[in-house]
Length: 68
Image (cartoon, rainbow, N blue to C red; front, side):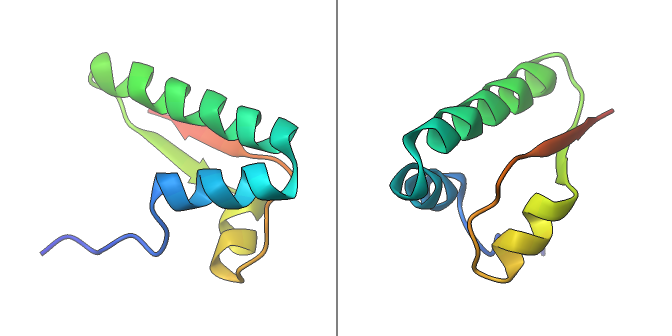
């Protein structure tokens, strides 16, 4: 059984936008990149400090995406 997400993309978007509307817009760019990569049969991973911040309940300052 696949692991359940700790936070959904929608919840991350709400938290980021509430903290800073510009950060909310950057999160939407991350989602757009992930969707584009997925359409091309690739995989996009959220990596780096944003993962740590989200796991700790913090709002990330930025997002790093690894694409395969």
